[in-house]
Length: 218
Ligand code: OGA
Ligand code: MN
Figure (spheres, rainbow, N blue to C red):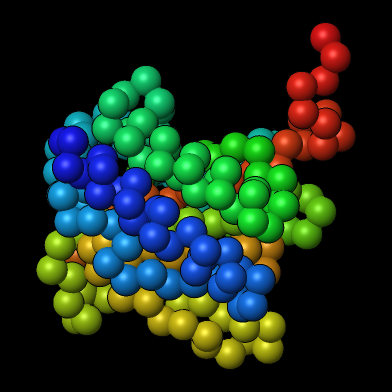
């Protein structure tokens, strides 16, 4: 466990400036082999052994608009809870990245929410945005893939589209690849996966609970 933790911290420290630069220049970055193998294995084994009761069908939209539409999206999710040590491992390291991005880009990222996602064979997530301009507190999306030995024929690619609908990237979900992108800037989709596909997805958010003010007076 200790090796996995230290290596993950090193990975963040090594990549933080590259991530910040790419967000400014292009709005997204794809980092193959970001996640050290020991951490990836820990998280993959954990996700693989989570009992069915810990997963639920993902919804589309938030709060009043929240609906489960398996035509658009047929993955299952498990929200991470910092009370669980291995879930905290990922959350704490994304916290390092949050602080770093705030220091270099003044992004005002307030917190991070994250879930494991599980696509059964035949599952997909059709074209969507993770946030709509001015209407969501999701600022930056992260996706990190956990399956070892993913082959091109396994499908499940993440496709990122540009402003004119052109394909910018088609990302094979290989173990350890991290993708970070501005949540309101890129339409994206997950193509049908031919194999059980496990990933960690998360969002750095602005604080919109009280007109952007942190720590409001009680
Ligand atoms: C999402 C999403 C991408 C992926 O969960 O919103 O777009 O590659 N995931 O899993
Ligand atoms: Mn998405």
